[in-house]
Length: 242
Image (cartoon, rainbow, N blue to C red):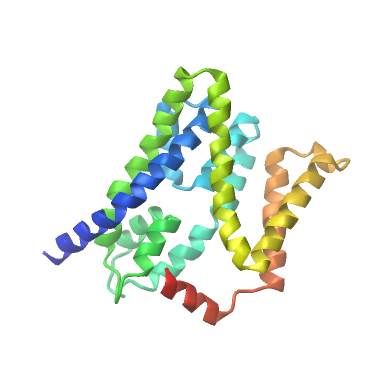
């Protein structure tokens, strides 16, 4: 009975998350359509990725015909933060929690699901995550499929206009934290500058866009992690605010 109650609480938390995901993934579907994916392929890609930045990197890499290895590496690098979230969330489970529960919960971790899960008091019941995932994951995947379907029916001019909406979403994601944290603001500015530089510098501009993204993501993240590590007290504060 307790698991059922926790599961229903997870569903309640997953409804607003899923509705937000649907709108975002619809825009991603437009990008996937431009990359030549079918609605079924878009659904599968979204179901197993569950990350806006990761999927954008995936779809644009496919559109640019990069190699399979580049697609795999760039998707892994962009989604690497979920490894840290999984480790953090695993500490909230009871020690007796079976591995298969940890495995399936880790599969469904997104920024928002991690946020509502880490905010739960006491030990975390995996059925809470299952409830949230039951709503959020299908809506995320369905939004991508419908975005592809809409992209196939709409004129190319409209499709190009809708593609811009995704850039607006990314701007909305990076601007608020950049205004509060100078380190983040510096990282954004440096990434913009180096991304442009890599596209025009001799020899480097001969690299595929996938390889350039991989190099910049790893290099900038590593340098900032070394120069400006997040202190333990700040981590605890963030967990409290989540």
